[in-house]
Image (cartoon, rainbow, N blue to C red; front, side, top):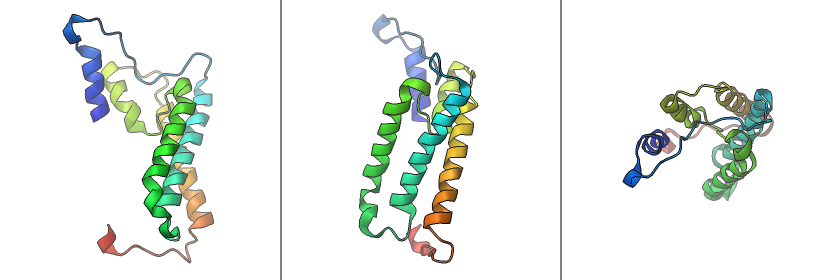
Length: 145
């Protein structure tokens, strides 16, 4: 929501009569194919979701949960630094959907949906099957929700 509001302000408001350049939605850099971007989004989202599982979700993690926000922030920052120049490093369809609606730019927008969904599904399956074994998984008490 905040991304959409900021994008609207940047796109449609001239601050003090200064020209504001046209800001586009997420787009692929020149030389980056759609399937290259899909693979990149899958890898970045896999890293993010795997980090969330390893630091915040895993019931066997012990006292490492206290650093979960730092670890998640670091992986998001690293993904942005690595992928921002190539495809924008969305990692979340909502992040790219708001600017796409405002600018009505839908070129290769499917990349920002397919990549994160596949990457997060792979990360969830890998972590659940390999690290959180169903026989040892403990359901959190309802008071912790």
